Length: 247
Image (cartoon, rainbow, N blue to C red; front, top):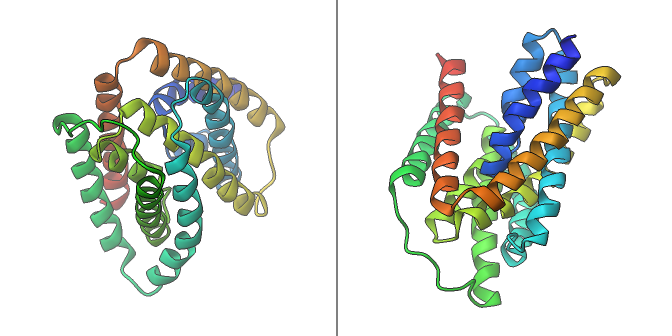
């Protein structure tokens, strides 16, 4: 019964997070723990579900040509390199202060998603410009993500939208990046926890169904401005969750 309930919750949250281009792990981890799942098993399961959902969603996004590869690949590579650097720099720093700064960034980014109207890009630009853009955003997301111990996806989406990318393309591009970031985290936590077969089965089903529904809504039923607002609301939710954990 608990596993079935976890599957339903996973389905609901995955729909919303897929539209925003973010994994649902940060929400699912505390939910699983509240249901009595071991913390490391909860983290490993949620991160694997991230990878599953974003893989399913990315199939549709790629077919619709929404993933900007010239930006996604540099972001992925540079973020992977700078994330460990950020983690090393964070040693000895006041983590609570860093988290409060991150909350401030999330609220600022959410305000931009909800109220700021960037000038749309006339095109994707030349390859050198896109490579430079991808490396810049990837460096920022990777370093700050490693510094704070959080995923960089919620930094990539608002950065791309603020730079003028269509919200759908920003979301789809970030979804592809989240696959690899989640798999990396899953492998790290998997070494410390066993997997609950029933929990994984029900939540994986919910994750895949939610990703299909979320990707369909994002590509076929929602307009760019609507996706932008959903991303803003999700960022506010992330910030509120972090504030609750800090106070």
